[in-house]
Image (cartoon, rainbow, N blue to C red):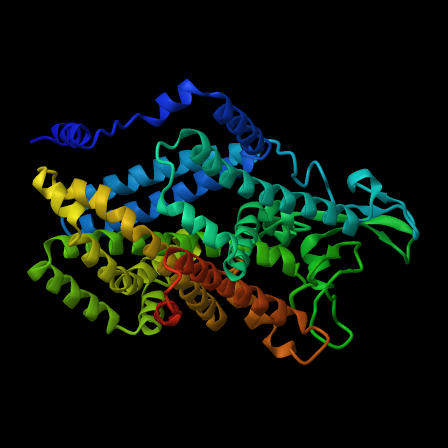
Length: 514
């Protein structure tokens, strides 16, 4: 019996007619069109940012995946491996060009539209080059505020899309999701986690526009750019390479310090102060947020995919297959994660594979390999439970294929649990990634690419001095993000099952650490 016949038979027995969503929208298009119009406008005003980030992420993932194929095929055929490398280079070059073209597209809230970098024309001003002649701090604050408000409203509007679907296009009057959302609306700790997550995504996506300068100009290629400033000694506007300006704006305690919310001697505003090498700390943390998002996102995404597939297969077939997966998971868990990360980083330190995503790709693969057993263990119980439910037995009796049963009847049941434990395990991945960057010596993200752990390391010698801000602010960013992820997981868990106690979530979070 085919899946089509099975669906028809079920509809005839239940009297339920499954009308496609597009048909329901066509019958009453106005609510959808009103919501979609606003969403299109919101995306259009920052389309260049979304497009460049998406294409750059795809390019990095493609290079990483083809690199693995290159290594595997190298043991079989050198010709095939070379063909993969040629394909990799060609596609990568094309995607990089497309990403650069997308990044060049004008956006509404870019630093070009609301610039904050400029210089005084005299000892008391006015400022030239900044937005409407405002002080750099005010111009930066205006752009920062508008971007945060934009991101919060966009997040709300995406949620509003679900409300429109529920009110106008969903066939069922009630689903368990309604109760989950209702409980989450009253869960202040969970809402705190959602807010932290939205703000973190805002930093990662809009980091180049949020910072008072850019990573390329201030960190990666500082001697390729120049800035103008008013020299009080000569009374003239002069230019200086950014690298030299950084060298003279170090925060190393004592009389050598540029603290939070202050200007340096070159008229540059630093919201979080500068590092011990004079680079802007706020810009450094924004760049670190993006690489952290890419690496941790790849790691937890792959780990979640593996855990979801294996949990459904082991629960559906049970017996020998379940025992085999359990044995493999126990073997992976027995490997010390931090030791494995250090070993892999050392082995690939000078290998071209270790340079993909600035060393982040190989770390993401190790994190995924060592994280999926924790996620699998967390959802194995719910998967076994749903595999024994009557509706799964009914689906078998209708002749549905195992793959269809897993996708339609088992996955929706365990996806909530996966979201809970994945969010908590992500915190462990971020801590592990930061720890490696803190240790340095070829571990973690390769410099000069910003990494939060490296910022903590750079400021550890100045904690008790006037340059306390370097380690403290960077460390607080890590703590706040990990706490927010755990709060988000707690909120989702309590929304799914209000009777659940916190011990399971705490164990999962602890298990996700390095």
